[in-house]
Amino acid sequence: MLSEINYLLFNSVVVVSFVASAVYLVFFFSQREDLRTIARTIFIGSGVLQSFYILSRYIIAGHTPITSQHEAVVFFAWSVTWAYLSFHWRYSVRNFGTFVSILVFIMLLIAAMVSREFHPLAPALQSLWLPVHAGVAVMAYGFLALAFCGAIMYLLQERELKSKKFGFFFSRLPSLDSLDQLNNHCLTAGFGLLTLGIITGSIWARQAWGTYWHWDPKETWSLITWFLYAAQIHQRFTLGWRGKRAAVMSIVGFIAVIFTLWGVNYLLGGVHSYAQ
Image (cartoon, rainbow, N blue to C red; front, side, top):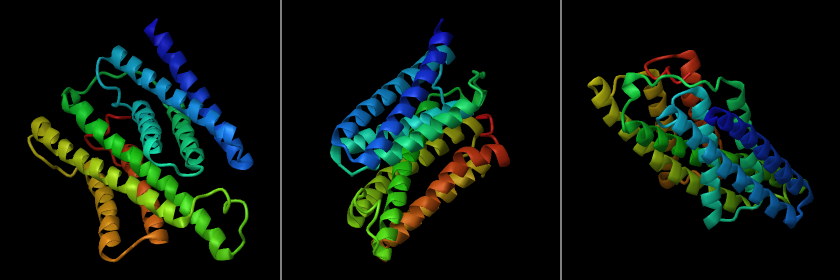
């Protein structure tokens, strides 16, 4: 019975997320304020359904559902959704929800294409560190995904301003300064959580394998990702790297995030490869 509910919940999540991104897209073209309110309400509904879906997998599996490829992607989409909604509670960035909702829907589509089967928990994962380390790391990815969306918006707006053809995007996107601030806020939150995720992972590795660090491919790429974002923050505060450079670095950093989360599993393997 619970398995059927779990199955229906995920299908509902995909459908509701699709409707949210579609309404956001219609709002982006029409700029009708009532549509933005409707889209935001549906997107909140998507976030709630995602939470119920994760909870149902937790009840069925008996552990935090973040140990398979499907679960990791769903958790990633959930973190992006709630990172955006928490961000929106404090800051208002015009049309940000359109880009974020589309990214979340793409993630859920990817999750729908991989196996939803439950797998036995590997001995090394049977620890209270699982929800702490994996949860913090994926939440970091959520905020870094927001920085990625902000970077895309920045480059689109800058392109129109430089060409002096104030067309489709110019009236729909915030100012370059607002987008740069958006990038900085999301990057700061994401980098702090990413650092915490690496520290908790090292402590867990010491308990599980007797060493804080053994250069597993996922560990190595996590460190590469951390250095990319650390370099961006360093350059921002020491050399004043803002605007386009910061936007490009956010995109490069997010590509490293994606490779760390998925590419490493498929191409490099290692002790983290059980998350297939």
